[in-house]
Each structure stands twice: as structure tokens, then as C-alpha cells.
Image (cartoon, rainbow over all chains, first blue to last red; front, side, top):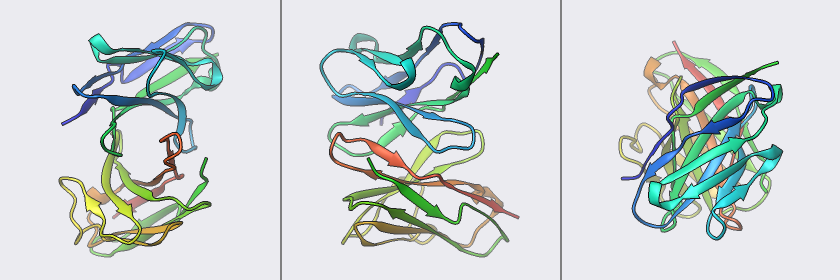
Length: 113
Length: 114
């Protein structure tokens, strides 16, 4: 069965610091990869996705993620975080043969001004 | 994209009762999903609901506990039956637009069982 691991449960950063959130998955087949964000009091929103092609994908609000197939990883990055990035971030994986999304446990990011 | 609404947004229920959660989408979609997000945990898929067929339940979830209806391409309901405090959770509706294969999520229903 597929599983998704997010290594950091809680991250605290100061504004302008760089961010990298780890995500590893276990599945040997072809996958689609996603990062979702949930801002306080809001519903889940898609940050970015990878289906194929360039392994470095850019999403909204300056976020990017790199798919490294050999490491089964899809880490999320942002060079300079803002207070408004305070949210919970979820990595998710989907087997291309199915529609089911498998989510990681989430990372709570707190950015202090 | 798809805009999803859920009713109710939150509820406090007594154990042994049932609650039906509604999910409405602003466009026709083939696949709808119901997730549960327990306190401090990630999202777990309960079932997939396609219009015109029985819902497909994930391991650990059964139809008697979580009956689902999907009467048309824009609407679904999830019932949480015979509730216990362990059912306290956020229940989320999600749809797959098939174009871009993105899943969109509703705002969730926060359920507390006392």
C-alpha cells in the first residue's frame, strides 16, 4: 500500500527564512504528487502538483517542489517565507491507475514576524 | 476549478444519534470523495462515490456506519450513524475534476460527539 511520510510535524521560522519541508512516499509505480495547504480557518487548497516532465515544479505564492524519483521524494521549498505562510502543509500521492489520494500527516508551519 | 459547499459547517451531537452531511458542487463531476480528518491527524479517505453506483469504501470503513448517497452529478451525502465520541472529526467532501486530475476540497464539517 502507498504511504506518505512528512518528516517535520511542526516548523517554526522567522520571516525571510528559507523553507524546506520533506515528503517521501513508498510506491514503485508511476505517481502523481501534490502539495496542499490549509490556512487557519480555511479549506484545503492545491499549492502545486507534479504529473510528468520537469521535476522542478512551481506553484502559487512562490512555492516550488522538486521530484527526485530515485529518492521517492517531493520536497517543498520557498526561499523566503512570510507571516502569511503560516498554515498546515500536506503532501499527497496518487497512483496514476487510481483516483485515490494518500496524504501525509501534515506539517504545521508557524512564521513569526 | 470547482466550488464545493458543505452543510452543516459544524455540529455537536449526542452519542447514538446520526448526522447527515451534505456536499454540493457548482459543476457536474464524476467522482466525489469523503475524507475524515481526526484531531491532529491527516486526511483519511472514507469512500469514493460515483453517481449511479454503490460507493466504494476503504478498509476500516463500512456502509452501515457511513452510508453515502450520490443522487446526481453535483450532490452527495455522508451519514455518520450511531455516533460515538471517536467519530468526532472533520469530514471533508472532495471532487475530482478529471481535467488536470486535481482534487478540490470542501470547507469541511466539524463534528463533535458528546
